[in-house]
Length: 496
Image (cartoon, rainbow, N blue to C red; front, side, top):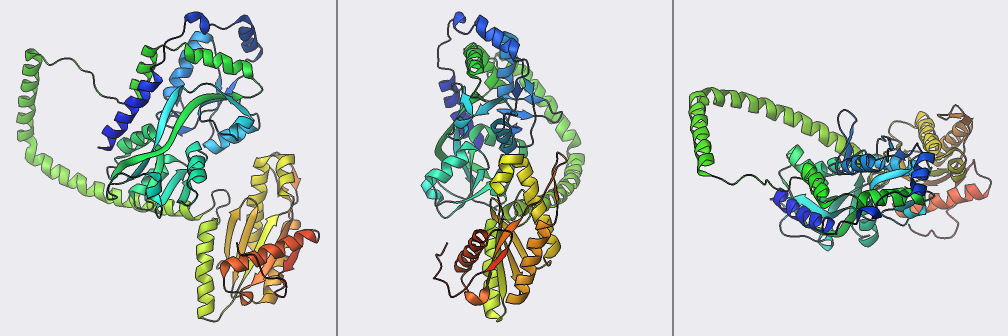
């Protein structure tokens, strides 16, 4: 059912994509100025999405393939438009490289206001609607409003993710690094729905045998995929657009049929062909009867082994997905949601057993300056180094998580105020005294500002976070690289 529905949508999409009339040949011939521009720019760096089948991906031999790769091959043969293909590990890194001018061209991207600040776009050449995929036990057609109260998976860095978060801010969403992970989370019941492109969803569902999934409706968003070029190279946008315009309707159909199975157009059944089929069926039935008993025994043995392997793989996958849902991708410590859930449990436990805990909120001083001076990759190294230093000071049962950007929260369990201040100062001093090595061989030192609050001052997590945030702000006002405890006699907090 899911395959038929997705293929029906792809027929509609391809009908739109192929409906335009072919331009006259002289409209896509390169001018002398454009040919000269290509001669002056022999090193054009092209970075695809690393794994976005069937649109574009790198296969097991790291060869660039897919719909966009076929478009690029035709343009290369027709225009001499050769590009150096660069492989990155994920889409976030591709976007970051383009923002830093380490990449010149993308092959299949949607326009967003943020991307238009540094990239220019051709007209769309692929249109892919985003659909709502759920398990079959969730009945009926669904729209985005019906997903209130359900856990919805989004793909980090995708334009569809920005669309959903902007238009449906009340949804309970979880971002994962890739579509395959998200589909398996829905299949195994770790989430209720995923917003995904129909073609890519069909590819994974058929390849991985996720037969308990179905398409429940449309999201209202459709990818208008285009080539994107750094915005200080307008000449290349025109060259690529001419290359796209030069591709005929027949070439377009050939490309899409190669990557998306839209149905078989076979020969007409003749009496001779029917006789051949009947003879083949008779021979096949005779062979099946002859080996039936042996096959049954073999199948039972294979099925038992396959079930055992499937259970082991599923257990490993569930463990991996649970890690993805609870940890911060960059630093490996708790993410915001998981940390806050654990903190609420610990506050209830502390109140029940009359114990205490302390919260330390801190962020890295002048972190924007580090990013601006050394680059975002260096900023990531600093954050990971700061986390490593903190973990050397903290106890194994203390809670530690990243709540956003360069901001972190530590919970010291069963800690009195005096001990808390000692630990906080030790963390602050350790970070200030430890040189951090960057990948380019340079070293830098960083500092943090810490705000401290104790559970004796309130039992509500949001109130305690507000207290610690105000204390951290006070530490920054007093010069940074220091620890400030919240004074409970100050004015009431603003609850987050």
